Amino acid sequence: MKRMLSFVVVATLGFASFVTAQTEPPAEEMEMVKRVISLMDHPLSPGLTISIVDFRKISRGYPKEIREKINRSSAFVIGSDPDVIYIDSKGEHFLLAMEGSDFSSYVLAAILEHETKHTQGFTECEAYDRQLKVWEIYMGRGVVTGKPSMDHAKFFETTRNRFCNAERSGR
View 1 (cartoon, rainbow, N blue to C red):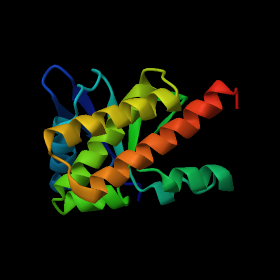
View 2: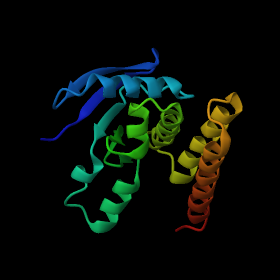
View 3: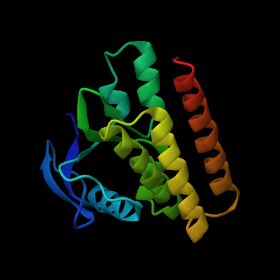
């Protein structure tokens, strides 16, 4: 059975209202995602849909390269459906946020900031730039601290630089 949770974001209120689901999603997942959205530095666009899915199940049937990319992601946007952000229900940070990890909740919030840039037509370079800037804001506020937050900042910066260099060189 395909398990998908979708909801439309009401940006002016800063929270999500759940409008459709193929199966009734656990209330805990809905609450966790609402909490993550509330941590975001920028509001989500009105009409944006968030779908929580098991990436391993939805990637079946795709070519190996695409499957691997999907399975390495915590969230993604599909170009043909730019108003939907898919979040992996089996991803490390999703599961840790479900257990109450504030750190992983902020990681997911930064990832949603990244994916939101894609829904607005921005490149990987620009999306990672936003993700890094938001992460630095979280660090500045002291809501993410220590070596794990520095490691994430370095990862976001390295990844951003790789994509920006590739985009500049036309690859």
